[in-house]
Length: 291
Image (cartoon, rainbow, N blue to C red):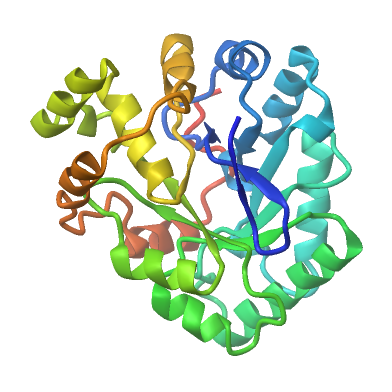
């Protein structure tokens, strides 16, 4: 495995296993990823409803805790002074671990009932800083934050987020946000690198893949890593899980990186307004798992 170093010198794997609940959960695939493929980074969240399932997969894989990099996220309905720590402790209990490697604010959004969103976000981040100081998480960060969100946050943060996890793929590489994170020593972590499987059909990606003897998915993941971004593809297919992690044995030439860079059109697959609606509707954790 290869790693990036966070601003506090904690090492984060360049590629990990995304487990977002959309598309379901496969115990067989999770065990295979850990035990056979050697995945180290697991990205989950209370919202996904699969922390307890992943605990069982980790136990069955017989992987040592210290060899894994576990990320979870705090859902906005748990934001606040009195609820942040209990939410983290809940994630630890469900994952059957004593600490997280990375804990993120899931969105820069708050429930509709909140009368002072700015104050709630500030109080919650300060709670994460305390949890970091306690050693309950080795790094803290945010998810789905824009450049403006980060600028606002840095007015009150004592600890600059170690990570910003956001949508990142060839059709939306967010050049300004990526540059801002790099300038402020915030590690960018990208989800939806394959566009939910649709981007592997792009002709130019396939042409590049043929030149390297790789699959289109491997080209897209390698491009993310060479862009300085941690990438967390998700799959419940064992063959694809193996394929996804086999991207560390080659590099893309500058001319091919330029071709992929030029595909950016600012296309977002996630809608911030739609997420606010889901938050306000108070849907249950793991509602898409279908278990």
